[in-house]
Image (cartoon, rainbow over all chains, first blue to last red; front, side):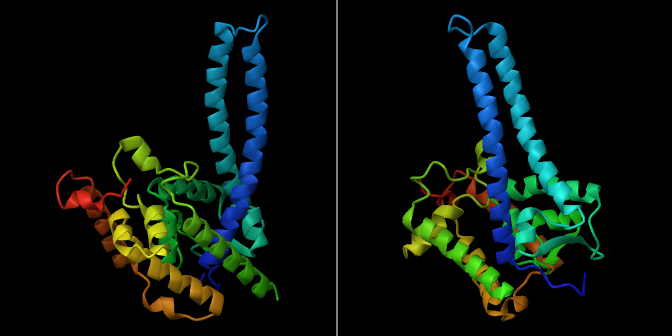
Length: 152
Length: 131
């Protein structure tokens, strides 16, 4: 890791915004599918929804929330442990994620890093803001997963 | 050339974010991200009021910014130094970065600040963001 140049917080911010836009588009598509299905189920035969339809929609809603959570987790974990070691946003900014030895992340480590982002964002993003004043530009989730973001 | 383009993109995004917070008051926009900690616990987290403080600083209301979240006076200099280093190739920020011990002290301070700002007593209740 010593021989690599840190990514720079500005580059990381832009990469995060690009990934955010991609995830928002995917979320909108899934939401539209869910919305149309829920609307047609609620319409029912006589214009009144049956009790079973309401229960099914509430259950589907929890499934929908879970899908969004898993999508986000899978997106970051898969791309950061892939050969490019970066999400599409990071690839665009020519940066990548490495472990403490400067090597590619294992899938387990990448999942741990993605899950740790929940803690980083839970307190008004202070976990992310930490990257501005820690020695190796590490955000809280980088410290937990012992990872670094460097120039590709 | 590639580096210049990425620096230009970073600068453009930062200017856009700054302009956004200058023209829009976080108190009047409901679509801004809400604090999960505050939503779940009803207590203010150490970062609550940060967006309001940034808006107030951009308008020169330094006292109101202090009331919203005085940590902005800690974060903003780091942010400016780090970004100017990145955009202009200087290395000034490395003299001010926190080591591991500094990070522990920082978290200890954040925890104390969180407890104090949630106490319903004067003067600690002055540390909660204005509504």
